[in-house]
Amino acid sequence: MRWSAGFGLALLACGGAVPLSVRPDPGNVIVLGMITTPDGASGRFQPAKVRVKQGDTLRFVIDGRTLHNVSFPPSENPGRSNLPPPGPYLTAPGQTYDLVVAMAPGTYHFQCDPHAPLGMTGVLTVVAGERGKAVPVDSAGAS
Ligand SMILES: [Cu+2]
Image (cartoon, helix red, strand yellow):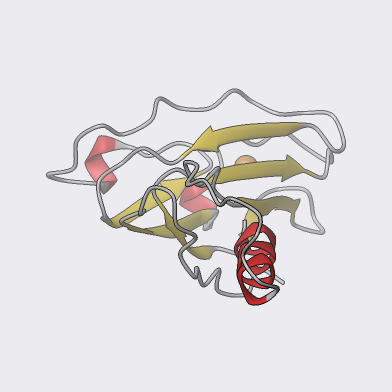
């Protein structure tokens, strides 16, 4: 959490009377929309390119106009191990699926299985996390 890092620095700046303990970084939650195309035939991830650190959580949120899932197919991620299993199909508006990023640093390709041929794909870049310390993370287009 960026917030807690700033808070810790503020405490230090105020005299440091409060004992600071190093806790494992709980990680950021990065929200990705699963947005159905206007014709209902496909979808897209929004953002479709994300950069996270290990331990962060990807939170997929569906618009509920049709079903979507997220998977990291081995065929699209050659040489990668520890790929997460395919996520469940989400259907209801606002339904979410959380995925804690546990893969090694690198670039990964993900997709919605039924809509990948229609372009519902994304790219995830994982950087190493540092325990007990917040790491600046760019989530391209995540704002
Ligand atoms: Cu889909």
